[in-house]
Length: 381
Image (cartoon, rainbow, N blue to C red; front, top):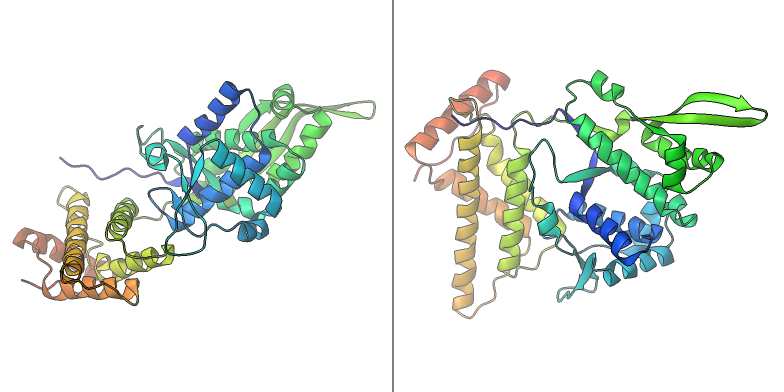
């Protein structure tokens, strides 16, 4: 019997940092005998954020501008540029040709390899960096003081809380999560004296509660034996995906990007977002509650994905029809073009089987009983 996906109740509200890429940094440190620069870490964090924003499954960023990130991160332009050069020199990113514009286009090297889930859901292959990072002066301070170990400690903490939060069922359990470090351990990690460690930790208070334990004084000196960290709830996101649509939407997003690249259509990241919004509005919202008898959404997901792929195939045939006759396929607005294609197929030629119509009909009934909303039925062949 098929089982519905088991989703976490809570997660860190942030963007992906694949463990494989973290391990690649560690390998460079070990094999080359060098310390990763704070500018390299800071720049890479901005690139990962941009990839998350554009949501490109191949790790390509088309709208990355150093001037914009100087403003967002507080890190100086020259430092970001130096970090960019370091990342290219050490093959963390590569610059691509951009025949459609003047912006520099980058690709995170081997992104698809590192982003592929190779472990169980209980042990995901990435941690998340809080979006709130760019609302603080954390990176600016790390770069200003040439302190990469400060960023490495952040990675360490985020990894620990990534593991702890997966088992949390309530807000109370999230608030109760903590991890402790001995002061001597932090002195070694940060390569600083105790008084300087305490100063550095003030920059962590945007993301964590920082509590000094076993505190006493000797003369005028403050002695701290341990430090306890708790994750601030501002950095936490509760799962509200009641109908388990997010994983499916991500898969469709990836299919769309591959299709646009294959068809050589000129597009921007915002075009991809508009297509996905139109599909959600024109098709997915009519199928949300179509649950199978075993309580899963697996059959619903298959129906939605098949519909999406068949629509892409139809558009692909239109493109080839134009190009075979020597013409150039062009649309004024990609989002509107796809919206019309989704709507026309759903209204007039959805192509569903009798069994699929029955399942979707049950979903429409469930929606009406739950919300009083009448959901539009698909057209028959």
